[in-house]
Length: 434
Ligand code: DOR
Image (spheres, rainbow, N blue to C red):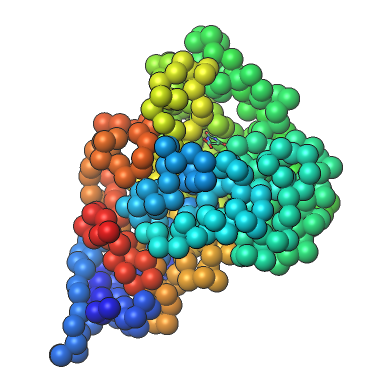
């Protein structure tokens, strides 16, 4: 592989920011300095980074890749192409597949599918067998294959005693963290959107914010009881953000993520009755959106995670209460996060922290060369972000196999221009290279 020179950008990582070129050789960064010249006689490919931020590749803690079992909605290959175009060099595949990722065999299968993908594909294992919430899955055998996050995502573990056992059991495996889909089913079942003024007006049964708050409260208590770390998936309510803020202040080992759609869309979108706006947890009130943004700005929320959830057209064309929840996220997360968090005063570099090095650490992917730092010797997993690039979201031009983006026709600002995976430029000038 020829050397790669990323020229003229501002390098940002957890250590700060500086104007510098980055030279990559044999998959690793060999030099970070101003005005690097390629030695005469050496071949190098140059990527222009003028006006751009050169950052560690983005890391998504939460993507539904749909394989095995729902290949008509998405495959590991199509999702990883979407991810690379979105600036990601790693994604964590959620286990609500068919069969669920609840054993070493299925973990191996998904890792194998991701081996030559356009980004690293890590796997989250299920906490319970079949994600049924009844019996613990073999967390140890999955951890032995490198799985670090476990979740029944799509459903929360309802039984507090089982969740306690899972936390105690998981503590035996270094680096392992349980991630909760925070939804108390007894409060949420039967609801299809956020419970509030809009659900009353539209006649769509609601899911109260308290369905989320109650489970976050319980799991904070279980974190205190067991000492095991807990990660809260896709927080969407002002109440749950405040609970996490207080748990962190009390020194508990909790982390949390938020999805881009909970930063930019509200329940008012459901007035269209278009199921493209149906998602779980649901789009909430403007006050909740403000609270989630504030949680990102003050560190209560550690990561932006896409909850990329592709669904076939036929399913999303059903009536609102019949359609499955979920929306695409990988290709649009970066500009939406920059927009929403820029509005509360976050600098692009701080937004990149939430999308790269902080999630990398939560998933243990930092030890595998994700999330930086951008320094000599590190694996070259990078994205080159043009924070000023304006573009319009066109569902037909997305790499995902599905089309369920709620942002069709929306003008967004900010784009990953180049994505480099272990030294290979897999996206150049916003075009996938293979
Ligand atoms: O909206 C959602 N879609 N929320 C989830 O928790 C699951 C996901 C899916 O798998 O479609």
